[in-house]
Image (cartoon, rainbow, N blue to C red):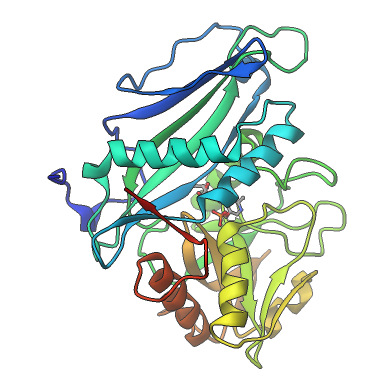
Length: 341
Ligand code: PLP
Ligand code: COI
């Protein structure tokens, strides 16, 4: 199979239309078989539930070309499970885990020519999503839905790749207590748009959101969870009911413990204690591990000892091990890697 003629090394995190996408429709209480189609356009009622009341959820995962040339996925079953949690919270029908994984595998296979080669630094980003499509005018869940999967080749989420970024403590909240912060609903991202535009205008790469109830504890950024390394080498990650349970973060905690022998702790992390950490990083599918060099809290700078030039030593080990597992250079725990045949 011949790859597309794309400058893999220099693509950013953007959308590029690929050949095929998967579509399945939910109607009269059941999902149809679904199919791969070529048309990337969607036609719907002006009154569709997604357009009026933002009834939409999504996932994000990547396909990688491993060292042996095979195309692989990283823990897609966990994305399937998280989409189920999102659907339940949003009063949407569940798309079954096995059908989700199958749809993702099929869509990647159909767009094989767009999977960046091993060593290029780029990957194929996969976006499964579901939305209410029939007309809804009273506030209630839709009764018809589409589940779709498209793919797009991507480079690094943050410009500069592994260069440490600077983030600000946001004055805006991302999620309400008992709200939807722990699911992947489009509405959480709509909430963050003004905050991210403001942060960018002020010269920051991202926002650190605090817990909205007390505004004293660290939650996450707009698109990634936090990991911190203490001065004695422990890996700490914030615990909260209103952050997205990142698959990358859960995998890194396992890698830290089981592959690197590090101590790990999931607990509440206070804004006040950030100054005591040795390293800080963001983790997520898009972000992979992005080191944070500096956090600015209303003019007060918190500079991590790892500096602004490169990733700290512990994050580098975590990064090398995780990406080694994803690219097939390091043996993966059982069930983590799915091969696209
Ligand atoms: N937090 C938010 C708000 C996200 O959008 C994402 C991206 O999916 C993550 C965290 C990271 O999650 P994952 O590692 O499952 O991609
Ligand atoms: C992902 O990492 O897959 C996400 O959904 C984050 C998004 C902000 C691009």
